[in-house]
View 1 (cartoon, rainbow, N blue to C red):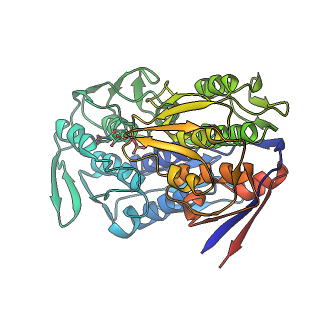
View 2: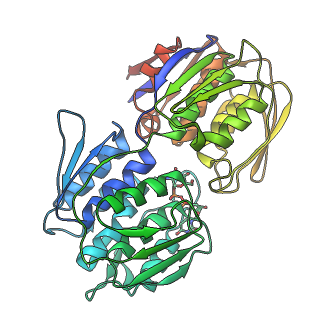
View 3: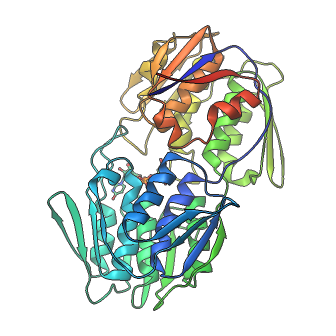
Length: 420
Ligand code: UD1
């Protein structure tokens, strides 16, 4: 099993290029099931979760390969299998994203019920409810969600009672091939939803309203193959910006439009960072200064992203002043705090909030990664700590960060991967 060894204390300094977005690529890969024609996807990141989704598509009978230019080409062809097996789903909850496309195209989908996970219970009731509203019969059979719509799905007027990214994605994919018009209300407005809609549109889907809280989808009889380039990863970019701020350094992230990180950049400015932006780059410079503590409350987009919460918690542990970080999107998503305390951080957990008193520095320690973003926050803590930090269970990081140690080495960090 791999670990990361970090010797902290170096100010990050340099430039890097944003990878393609994991959270956009996953639903877009699932959407290739909506057509039998070939789809070519550029800028799909090299990540464990992406490999899992590619394996899942193969297990459903699709031909999936990464060509020599790096594009992922998927041809789902005629259906062979409609079952997403437990062994794959248990390693990645986003496997649930094949539910809508399989059901819409084939009238049958069997997806292993995703269990609880490290960041709360994360139910999928809304994914199921919207598909039922479109006419599907959904049962849980031997641990599988079995959805049947032998006569096809029908358009629906549906209001989500919680904003859900994955639920919105499943609904919009299913509605694209349903008979008639669907109006989906209180949907997620994340940039990754916009990216999925743009991909679906390039396949011939008729959708309006992406980026607002209502999506209107006019179902079509069939979708065609498409070539598409996945948007950049705003969470990866944000993580490197926070890492640079925490180490009092500077970084320039290229290949990403600054608007999609607006709220994150605003928070970083509050820490004292000097941020400059171009059409497709963001640069941060702390000018050697210690960051100031900032309060954070997570919310669905365009609010502060839950996927950046742990990184700001790490920054606040060494910032000047006290701060409160409140998690409203997921339950039980402050677990990184316990490992950070082992590094000398002063954090008091109070329900869904962490009260943090900034310390001048942390001390390196052996720590354990618990989920993807918590792991990234431990890397940031290791970069600012004195001495050696060893992070175990880093398979969580490999799910969402492409070559994190290589990128940080390019920025001057003393970090390496070891296999034990
Ligand atoms: C996606 C992202 C994840 C991000 C999250 C919120 C992917 C692959 N993952 O996860 O990185 O942290 O959005 O921005 O894109 N909920 C229900 N019932 C449902 C579905 C969700 O109650 O049927 C609740 C969840 O428990 C959670 C909230 O809704 O409290 C938001 O979850 P959701 O937006 O669905 O997150 P994911 O799509 O799983």
